Length: 364
Image (tube, rainbow, N blue to C red; front, side):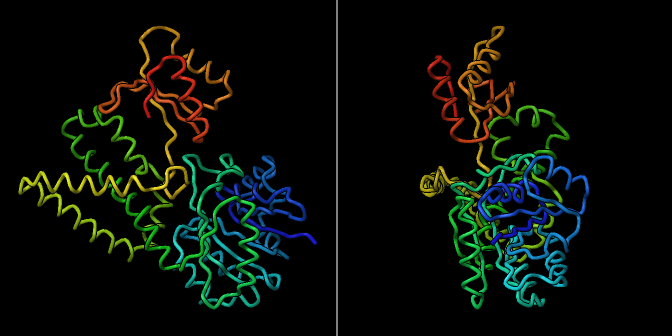
């Protein structure tokens, strides 16, 4: 018997899910988009077995339906699905980064014999779109499922078994708890990064040195401020109540530092850094998380012709996949002038060893 998996929105996440399932014995993957050009792209890139612009055609007889559309459109899609003649026992899930609102929507509408189980794969990429899709995206990442307490355990187990093909670690969490945690470790940092960049932008309007000198560490710690504005608008508004409470707590942390500085409390400042350092040192290093990891190296190179070409050539000869190369004019924290970016940790580690063996000074 064939298992039909319908994926609505075959971008980075939806396309990567499709590639995890496509070609597996007894599985057929159908992609959906309202845009005919996107449908043609899905097929041309061989990400799905079949693609269509018809919602009913995609959902018809589907055993599993993945909603991989933006958070702001999830409820509309779920309501539309509730009006279709879904296969009895069909399992609907999503990949949104907020869970309480879509869970409430599923409780509110009549899905008849279908089951809804919220989901959130905690993995991503600096790139987007189906072009960036890969079956390796979820490997070694947490994949959160948020079933209802009175939901079908059989349906949950079926979805869990299917998701084992992603090679992610499946974690079962209450929807509200999920939003509390993700709000703190992902949504709040995005707000802080945007606010910090905009603060420096304001200073730069009267003195362009702010922009000129904001290299290295500043650019790295604020890179998430470049995230898609529309997607993040929807995420933050959807998790508004959680974020308002978190921002109040953040104001308390900032007020604490203001007080330490006003009082000249060097011991208190040192203690704050020590506490943060101890906690951060205990964070997992090689597990994917909500905020995409950087796989960058910085190389201090001599200023003579051909040196950059030599580095790129040696990496290519060693089959190390270099995704980007940037010459940096100013770094306040690392003396390197060449920034090398990689798509995964393995390539970064191999590049590090190779460049050190060539007597280059390499910084992480």
